[in-house]
Length: 245
Image (cartoon, rainbow, N blue to C red; front, top):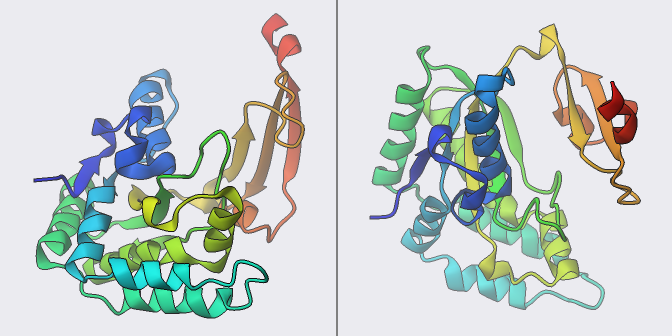
């Protein structure tokens, strides 16, 4: 039987096909850097196998393919309605009992507190690749607490594989819609009011210049950067100088 759940401690960067790009990176950081003082909140992945099981259980494959096949690829005049119909198919579908219990059991077992607050984050198999990022195109949900809210958020993440932006991006990058799958990372929330968050690039993201580390930071939640709702503080670190310190 394929695993519906994988703990961060079981995940490495080689597991993109099973847990998506975001969660594979989280697992790699959790396992490789925690002992070096880089604290990564613990969590687990609802795997690609779970997503595919959910889609198959509800017999949604052909319906979703038909919606994507019917896209107006010239002007994308029906993008909004096609995306909305695809998301509704997923949100109206039934979460199988065995998948529900696997998610709930992981939530209860991995986190120490009763009904902890978690972040529920989409992680697609085509994101964080050299030629594609999908940054901000799939949904994440913060401050989720309790079994019912968690199951709903997981389903919402599944549905976000068909946001208008994600559909259009796959078209632009020539990804087959039916070959991109989604995993969900469930991760302990941290106190955003006691610190800051940000994004770090190991090269300059616009030009690709390799001698620059580009860091953007804000007070509070990183979602504000991802969604572009605030202008972050930016820092450019010149690697050759850093090596001399």
